[in-house]
Image (cartoon, rainbow, N blue to C red; front, side, top):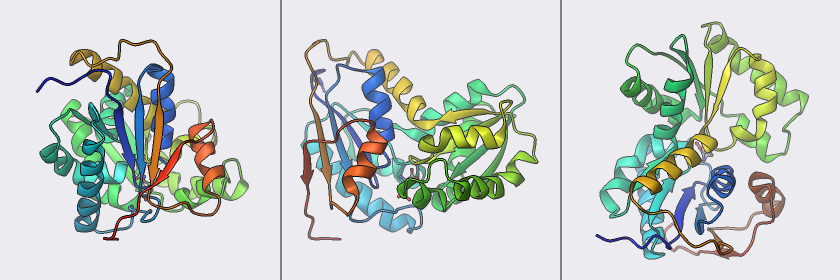
Length: 271
Ligand code: DGL
């Protein structure tokens, strides 16, 4: 199938957290059109069952394929960890996910092979990062920790707050006790507390930002498939969400680092 390189990149997430990936894509690939889908009516996914997540993922994939995207980026670590195959089975265009990208960067970054991974409970329970890192480097030792409180703390805007720092200290203590030299931020929300996390883990531990990793991998994938947009015109950005909650604009713009428009609300019967 011949894909038109001027088509948009499709990026999706359980909510607005995936805008950290969009922000990294805008910086790394400034001439690419982007269509973003955030399932704001049904977030969080990180505590839902695999069946439910797979069902939601199918709906979103079909929606973005109808928008004629040239590639699909699974920005949500939770969806990537349990439903990446669902997306690949449905998609005629190349698919990339944050876990693959983060694992690749972590394997390249570590010197000792001792890697920590933090994410939602579903991501951590799936063991997807451990599998993906081992595929790159089979002698790696992976130490995972679910950090469910980070998502609401970030959404509250407590990016530098003492409560967030104490929460991070508590969550990261067991992982740090394993003498890791690399820590994967395996959730869309965590790049926003990267300075605080770096402070807590110390300068000797390298943080792998899954959003940045994703942008690098996307650039490589598009180049490899001859899919980079050659136009140097101002690109179009479109945002689709399933709900516009209170504080949506503030939180969304914090994730994106710029104004968030135009936003379209998609109403699905099946919630
Ligand atoms: N987007 C999710 C992730 O990256 C975090 C929010 C959620 O639980 O849905 O894992």
